[in-house]
Image 1 (tube, rainbow, N blue to C red):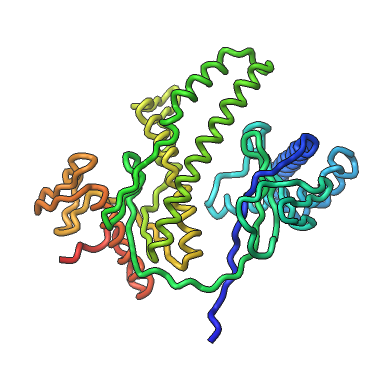
Image 2: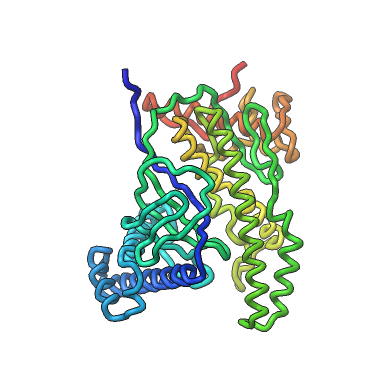
Length: 398
């Protein structure tokens, strides 16, 4: 009997070996894409503000085509990348209305990510890619490309340009692992698992904080927009890129190991954006403990909880596993033996001692166990159609 198969989408990212002329072309294309995005966004805003009319890519694409005919420097840019940018704006509006992201903002040079996408017309030949109106560009091939290429995205990260090739890959439906685990995210420890495993937080930003502070002080002393100013700024950008790449690499290795060995992973449904919001307040209503909250926000973002969840979700899907997110309320305060829930149960960051029955355990491991039981309870209710239980779930088996 033939084994069932499915199609997944996998991206392969490589650093480009672009010539100075090709780098100039990339910057020009990214700049025009940024302009088209801003013009279309402003047009939609005005149409809705003045006439209460909603625009879409269907009505704006002909105007982008007309714009290309009026300006040679816009016509020199491949038409398909501009069309894709307008369609990206459609997707941004959809994500906003479905409450998956904020309202689309204007793109700014030096702040927004420079990128553009080719949906067709590109070619791949061993260690080089062909881009319409640009030609063949070499790249550092760090892995083999499997599947059928569907589209290609060129983006800038620091001073380098990268190509990301999205492919449709056919694979057999994997057999999920039977092992289940709950994960409690933290700052002192990156995460603690219900099986007792603890993954340390590398604190990447803290490691480079002194060097970053030193470079930022040098930048503050430069004459704005001078050559030395841009040189100092480039060094800061390079260091930020190194920090982000190091953090992403560590997260990839951690999530790959978890997804490879577990069929069910339960995590807390953390609202990272709300948790890392500024406490500064306003002039009339100033915030409290702003300095301490700022340090906490920095640590939360450095731990990359959102990226951890994103990677874990698609990797588990590839491996045939399931990711469940549960309400984090009281997961760290509930005793798994007697069910007593109180903030006094967690007297310190590392120890959990129930004031009712005396049960003691590592605080983070105990929270991970509560998270796992909440996930099991939620999964059982979804299968049976019963009412979903509270976040802390059921009690520990005797």
